[in-house]
Image 1 (cartoon, rainbow, N blue to C red):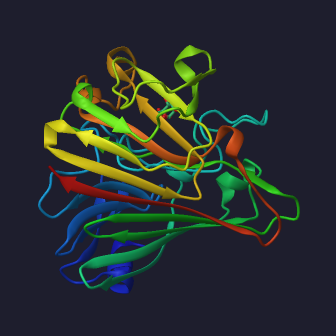
Image 2: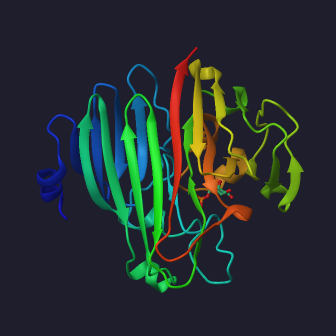
Length: 299
Ligand SMILES: O=P(O)(O)OC[C@H]1O[C@H](O)[C@H](O)[C@@H](O)[C@@H]1O
C-alpha cells in the first residue's frame, strides 16, 4: 500500500501519520501521553518518548534506513531464530522478521493511548528459508507505558519451532553509570567467553566491557537505573524465559558501520526473549504470546 492509501485507511489526523524516511515507510505517532515512530519494515519501533522524559529508546545516528537492512536501535523484532540460525540451514542473523515488510493491521486512539497492530505472514523470503505456515501479530499500546505483545500462530502440519525477542536498545545517559537489577543469581551463557555457562553474582549488574549474555530461565522484571537521565526504566515481561544483555563497547562498535563511534556509551540492550534452551514449539493451530511492558519513573 502506498503512503497516500495508508494515510487514507489508517491515518488519524494530528495523531498518526505515515511518511517516507530514507527508503522506508514509517508511522509517526503523537498523543497527549507519548510520541513514537514505527517502521513497517521489521515492525520496528525506532522511537518512543513518553511526555515529560527524554527518549527511552536509543537509535544510532548512523543507522541506515534501507530496504533489507535492520535499523540499528529501537526495538528490532527477532523471529524465528535468535543470533545465528542453529538448525544447520542458511539464513540471516536474528531471522527475517526484522528486515521484512509487515502489514499494517489497525490503529485506534483510546484515551491518551494509541493501540495498533502489525502483521507478518509468509512471503517469498520466509518460504525460501522454510517458513511457510505461520502468522505473527504484533500488538502495541503507545502511551505513558509501552506495551508490546507478539502473538505467533502455527498453520504448519509439522511442529513450528522458533525463537523470538524484543531486541530493545534503551537510551541511557552513560552505560558505565547505569545499573540493572533483576538478574541476580540467574544462570547465563557468556557469548564473549565461548558460550560458557555462568551465574550472575554482581547485584546490581554494571557493565565494564563489551557484554553479550543470554540469561536463562528468568521471567524477572529488570530495572535499569539510568543515573545520567535521573530515571528508572522498568522492563516487565510475560511468557518470556530468556533475557539478553548486550553492549558492543569500543572495539565492536568500531567494526559496525551503522553505529557512531561513541554510540555504545548511550545504550544498553535488555532483550525480552524466548531463545537458546527456551525456543517455542507450536503444534498446528496453536498460539503463543510473548509480552513486555516498559515504563519509566523519574527520580
Ligand atoms: O548486529 P546484530 O545482528 O543486530 O546483533 C547485535 C547483537 O544482538 C544480540 O544482542 C546478540 O546476543 C549479539 O550477539 C549481537 O551481536
